[in-house]
Amino acid sequence: MTKTFTPSRPIWCAGCGDFGVLHALIGGFEELGIPEHERFVVAGIGCSGTLQNNLSCYGYHTLHGRVLPTCTGAKLANPELTVVGVGGDGDGYAIGGGHLLHAFKRNPGVAYIVMNNGTYGLTKGQASPTAPEGWQNSSSKGVAQNLEEDLDPIMFGLSIPGSTYLARAYAGQPAQLQRLVTGALEHSRHGHGMGYVEVLSPCVTYNDSYRDWRTRVYDIDSEDGYDSTNKSSAFSRMSELRDEGRLPLGLIYKGTHPSLEAVSLSKKYKAPALHDLENERFESAFEEALESYIV
Image (cartoon, rainbow, N blue to C red):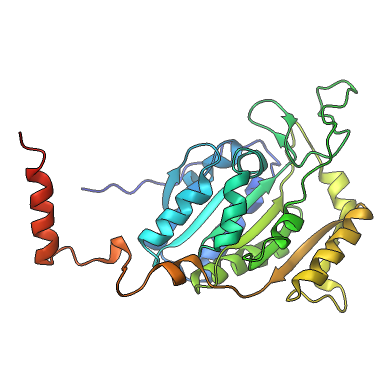
């Protein structure tokens, strides 16, 4: 009745930052001892949209920009699953930006990892919402392709009351990336809400930002006196670092707020996947539904 598929080989370019995310996610699953049948990875569009094909899990390739509502539905259907959403900056911040807002607000118990490279890599290098003002890709011949200021998703998340775990990592620093991804998985699994990690993941073909980002990243985890539990002070510090042209890495904020499943599910409103299907009430309802299709 079922078939187990062997994880495929990634199709990404050599040097793509997404490799780091894949290995961090695999390491997080293994470190927390999450069995394969409890992993559900939902992927978006673009290069990162194939990540779920490369590890042992249940995977689902959703519509463009719809990673978060799909993750939310899966978690409410079966809260015992470890639900992980993965996608790119275009998928998450452009067409999926409205869903990101409501996911921060609702705080569903899922992990959401966004691979940010500042460009639409799969469609040949257009500017994404996180491309800096004046940005140009390797084929633009010196002509600026972005006249707008870039979106800062971390500051966006800090402005939403419901957000509970906000972190940023860099593919060029795998140890910290592994720790933050594992923390996001643990946060969501323990019923605390959405574990969000933005990963600076360079596109070596259209936006090879390794050299630039290597000099601009700033490890907030090692800053004396930084309080990751104070959302307002975290916002102020992120704003200061942005003005300095720095890219803060680390656990930006971790707080508490009721998760969506905690306020939505109860003994009265049990998750659909956890119902006893052998119950006579379900059997009679199923038969009644079938009969309704008979003309």
